[in-house]
Amino acid sequence: MSTKYDRHGALHVNNAGRLVDHNGETVVLHGYCTHDLSWYPEYVNRDFLKYMRDEWHIDIIRLSMYTAEEDGYCVGDDENRKKLLEVVDRGVKFATELGLYVIIDWHILSDSNPLMYADMAEEFFKIVSRKYASYGNVFYEICNEPNVDCTWKDIKSYAERIIPVIRKNDEYAVIIVGTPKWSQRLDEAHEDPVTIDKNLMYTLHFYANTHTDELRDLAKEAFEVKFPVMVTEFGTCSADGAGAHNAEEADKWIALLEENNISYAMWNISNRDETSAMLKPDCTNITGPYTDDELREPAIWYREVLKAHK
Image 1 (cartoon, rainbow, N blue to C red):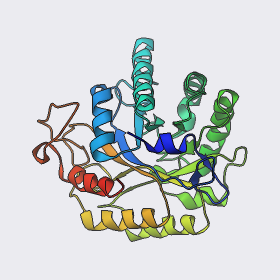
Image 2 (spheres, helix red, strand yellow):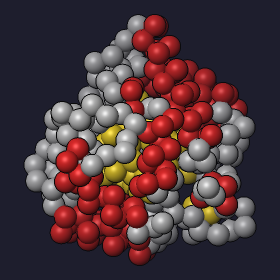
Image 3 (cartoon, rainbow, N blue to C red):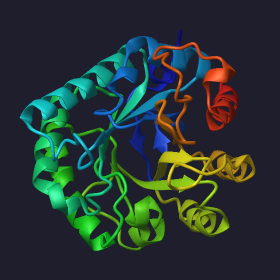
Image 4 (cartoon, rainbow, N blue to C red):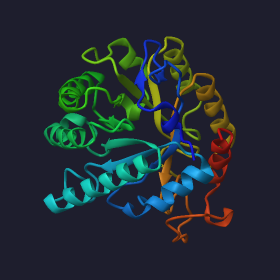
């Protein structure tokens, strides 16, 4: 089957802050995020990704590699890091075979400031950018959700360290930069953007049962001035991954993103016992297909959102 990558190839950010192909055509991507690659590596398999491509019509997968949680890249031993790099490699290779775009996500969370493990981030991005420099479908997300006691000044300083590491190996890939307060404060990034590179996007994350008009207003301001934004993670529930599925607010968010040609990926592919998980806890199927009885309510909702892009 013809995929979006087959049609558009490698993408870049244009002067209007949009993802475009080599002909200047705007490209909008829709996909899903894995959960922690240490905890749920089994879903990074070719059959599952093919099923999600063919039946759910995703065109991008985000490989969420936690850094400081249990068995995270920065807190585990060398053997654990090797395993994580192998899972990332598997995900990139399968995505590439299937014509999917892929985000390699340095998923900070409890290590709230990306400067905490900046040395290890440099080494990681040196490895992956060297390995995938010839791949036109790879994005590098250099810090997931900077949060407590982390300023935009800290994030910008970190980005100015990591971006040259990637660019030494990969001149053309899109690099995605996190924003303060769990990737919500686009305004702070827009007021003082990273200037050492032009092929950048900035993250906006939202959870529809927590983040409503106030965050949407911040997003609208960024969209109006053509700031380059990608929603690399969102949910329909509360920000902690629990709570109710709020379809009404989620629909408002999707309408806003569609109106502004913003790419997005939903959290998360796992059978974890939380609202944001795609699968119910008793579902042991790791390849699909899935019945509605195996899926959580947000996933059923999102399947219909994705099918609209068929």
